[in-house]
Length: 113
Image (cartoon, rainbow, N blue to C red; front, top):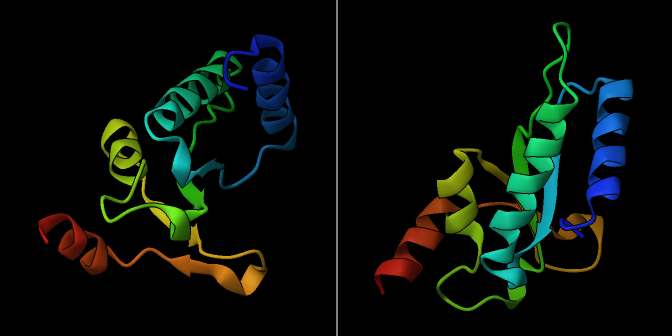
């Protein structure tokens, strides 16, 4: 819903009001380059809410549905490249134990295979 400007503003206001220590963007690995548009617009909405005492921005990424992408790892590389933010976890199932740390070696091997 990145094109829903009022929604993006409200989410950014929630971040501003709660002042979290860490802002994690959660996106689907299946959406491809649309994920880059989502994270860019959300981060812009966060920056629009910034003031002198609080300058929020996205700190990291969690990608869901990572188990359903092909060998080229979907949107993961595009997100990291466009934001310079790390992927903390990837979702490979429907339950909390299915959140896994991204294995960079596996991703590199799948790209070079």
